[in-house]
Image (tube, rainbow over all chains, first blue to last red; front, side, top):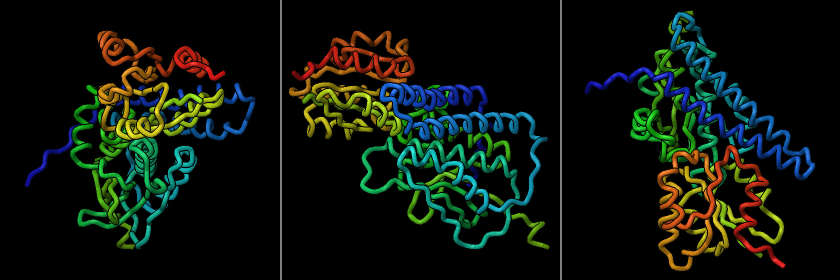
Length: 239
Length: 128
């Protein structure tokens, strides 16, 4: 069955989403600073710092996505270890996950050879995606157990999948398709997934699209996730 | 002891607002979704509701319609404390105020903790 090729993301729509999304960390910083000043305590400074870092990362990733989309010539692909990208992604997301009470788990079991990708772009997409999911998970209602986000890589019949997985059925292909269509027209294009504009997910979508990859829903070990399919680097395999 | 139901989907903001509102003989009960908020209201018997409109799945407005449909909760004051700019509510303010009993609207990016606390003080009696 033929499937329609995904449309290139609209960068103006994305900018609106990013601007809206940035209000959240800035608001968190402003109110936490006010609360600290009222209580004359400095113990919340770490939270403020990681919130600011996360906002800066979202901006950086947005800029990278736009650059790659506008100047595809900048895209130099190399052989990349997916496991190492996932480890670095986990490190970048660690402080934000702590702020939100979400546990990060690595699942990079199995031996996968390198893939062909733009390393910085792949990592930026996964970090954007992860930050959006970390914010979204606690907003979905009271959890029976510790909220966990798994950074995983596994083999599928299409290639090697790198993605982020959680116990949330809201991560469906339908939700993603509707979200892409609603990006400009709704303050909450991913209504069933997140209370925010979901800009991190659309930034990841933009970066992956610029790299001629697709953001897609995926399932792994009974978890639901978002990720991308990467092709093995044949050059290295021959060595 | 007065009871406040704080409906805030963002985990980090929820902790900050809870800290800022707590004390002064107040009990703060937190809910992140509309559905959880109804259950929490049933359990905690709130004297005041502080509500974000942008929630996952069901919006704060849907919550308000359900909340007001119960006779016991028709007169409990509600403050909307939201990311949604007031201009987007200009046309529906009358409905929110007259029919859904919204007493105050605070635009989150511009509302300090002090302003939020003042709005709360205006609506619930301080314990003796």
